[in-house]
Length: 282
Image 1 (cartoon, one colour):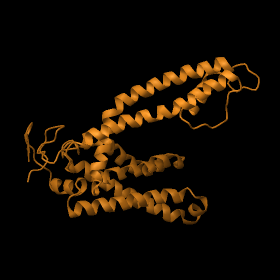
Image 2 (image 1 turned 180 degrees about the horizontal axis):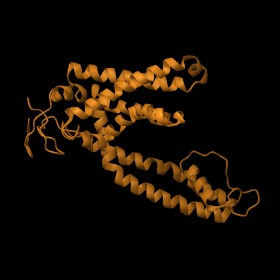
Image 3 (image 1 turned 60 degrees about the horizontal axis):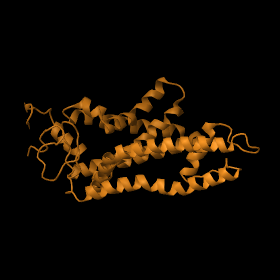
């Protein structure tokens, strides 16, 4: 196999075959592997949910533990094969999916050495995130890429908007404290509580645990309520604009780079746009 940057790279025995099965979805065995992995993930989540029900766990605890260990061993083998199949294992291990794959197997082993194993449930539920990698199984590849690109392209503007929103809620919360603080029957006892009320109101959640009692406070609350509807639409419009731009581009392929595990390549791509590694040596 040739790499335009490093010349010829020799693959390990069966490395390409394993990579095609595990990372690709356009072959029979690739689809079979993805379907099997999906079943295993859903089964592991079902086991986790059943363990949280005291009556079921008390009756079938041993069977659930055995099932959990079987799934953990299978996930461990799969994780090892993924590291073996790529040319830069450490780079894959640091990637988003690499971390998720590690979290899929780590909790069960930690439960052997660390007390309070129920705290690791939150890590085990992370296995559900692995379903996102299986969206390339069918026609979801374009929709997944569309969403991923749109979020990645708009995060700066959304971050700026959230920072601006934080400033607004702080100012309005402080103003509400000046209007309501010290008023009889008012629960605006301090600025943090007032900011909490502002966040709840401006997001249109409205718990109702705190409400203004003065006339000016109610006027300000009414303004915030109306303002909340327009604020919710802003990040939606930002992401939608990026989705519209991306949808006009050509559809992408499902090839996964064997060097850096990048997936978002155009159909006519021969080399990875991230690292320059050749995508297919056939």
